[in-house]
Length: 506
Image (cartoon, rainbow, N blue to C red; front, side):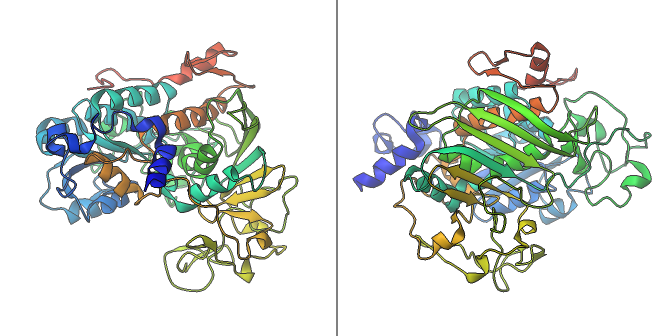
């Protein structure tokens, strides 16, 4: 048991400071004396957002906790969830929900467009509410620091919605690298097929009447006012909706963070944990296709250079987006599966089949206990570059490791090395699940694995890439001063625009 305690502290380190009373949990009469609920008492959870990703976040918490209030500005997008909870109070303005229902709310899910994540979370935390905030947590670095400082000030439990941080494979990746199996890692590549939604658009279509089912002013929130447009005929059959919403907002500078905001918090989770990444020395966009004055490009490659960390050497990380197949990387075999493995057989949850298309997915095939479950279908084939558009590769001086979208399917390359492979003994604590981890923290347990003290330093370096996409040339950043040192104009992208009539923190 002493070893278990050591492993727990190894993972959370100083993040546990202040999470328990000085004398331990037994030193107070009950968790309620600390302001926490009993672990057996249900949380009262509200949700800011009810359609889209919010629906699955609500579903992830609902089996064990009470859903008590809902807020969404789009009646069409939120209809299914609103109908599922007919008796709950429902709002379009989360500020009014918090004012009226606040006494009955313990915690809040926040799953709305990126530009409103931070202000919604701030309004909740200053009222003492725990928050589960969807990735990429926020749109600017200043907002990220405000979130971290406020969470610590009000001692609320937090979690960013990058569920891969709870994945077994993310921990296995870190433990494999720390075991020295591939030696010193000096280069990492991570990639995605996003954006699926339109990016690089150069003209804004003519204005339309706002649908009666949408509160457009509330949807804009802190962002500068503009006319609503559906996008016209060009967007009539777009699977992600009209010009701005319900989903295409992700590609706009003012509302989202592009493909980085959608997938980097997932795909870069394993590199961030395994390599203990902090602040990069520089960030540079080395490829950019399909540019726009108001949207992110259609495809990019971003280069992050990180300094030495402890006994780890400097490392260069490349982010590739807009891909149709896994990237060609010098020193990595072209005919290997990289990133996500195909799912062999039939049944199970939806995912990519052996031909790379969406289809039946059986139980996980990569991991059974501490042994990798090998399958002959994983062996090299000339057609396999096109199978997996998401993943990461770690290139060490003694070998190569690849992981899937959420850190799953961690394995050595060539995959032949995984026959009868046993993973190193675990050093990191295992997650009970991303929602359960947060719920446990809300009730006085250990901080969640992607709480804001962990998430903000991660998001900070990721968001430097978002800024780099908006300027020319390399950027250099002083984290202590929260300042880009070699491009004064780029500093305007560190903070958000806040429209008159909105307050950031309630």
